[in-house]
Each structure stands twice: as structure tokens, then as C-alpha cells.
Amino acid sequence: MRECLNCKKEYKPFPTAIQTQKFCSRICYNAANLFSSPYTSAISKGKVGAIAELIVAADLIKRGYEVFRSVSQDSSSDLLILKHNKAFTVEVKSSVRNRKGKIAVFKGKLKSDILASFIHRENVIIYNPNVDGYLFKKI
Ligand SMILES: [Zn+2]
Image (cartoon, rainbow, N blue to C red; front, side):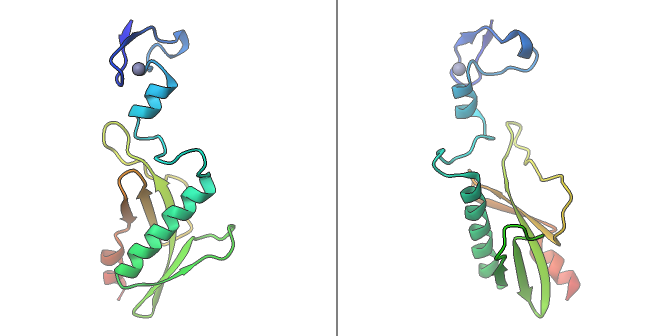
């Protein structure tokens, strides 16, 4: 028997997940795990992506950039930003923090100059490279 990290009840782990299981059920996993989406199932993956893009776009406008959003879903970048006549492409990814507090950063091949990871649960954007520092070097 093992104690569920969420509800604290004793449970018997599944034989196939005996090493790794930390929750008694999927419900407890979702309730406790920061990987879970903060949205209901009515908000599709596409809508979650659009929310992230719009929040990042608004943040970049606040930072003084002109922001252009891609018209096609198949584009290599989500946003194009301009400041002092320098243009940069931005890829926006929805991100999460794991139970150890680490941010899961997109590890795939990036075609854009800047990766903007948006953590929906925390309303936090992490730019890599840091947008202002990055542009400062280029100007
Ligand atoms: Zn539980």
C-alpha cells in the first residue's frame, strides 16, 4: 500500500506502475499535478494555443514591440515582432511546471529567433533568449 500524494488515502499501486505511481487515481493525478491544463475540456488544444499567443502578443506590445501575428496555422513562427527596425520571429509554446518546480521547456527544433513559453496556470511567460537582453545586443 502507498499514500496518495493528493488525497493522502492509502491505495494499491497498479502492478505495471509500481515504481512510479504517486496518485491513487487519474482524478488525483490531475488535481495535484501541475502538468494538467487549467482549462476545461471545452477549451480545445487550438484554443489553448491561441490564448498563449494572444497573451504573449499583449506582453510584447507592453514591452514596446510592434507585433504581427501569423495568418496561417502552418507558419514557421507564431509572431513577428519589430523594434528599432529589427525584426524577430517568435514561437509561442504552452508550458507547464512539474512537481519539482522545473519548467518543461520545448526541446524540439525551433525555427524562430525567440521561444516564448507561456505557463497558463501561473500566467507567466519565459522568453528564451530573454527578449529585451537579446534585442539589446542586436541593436
Ligand atoms: Zn488520491
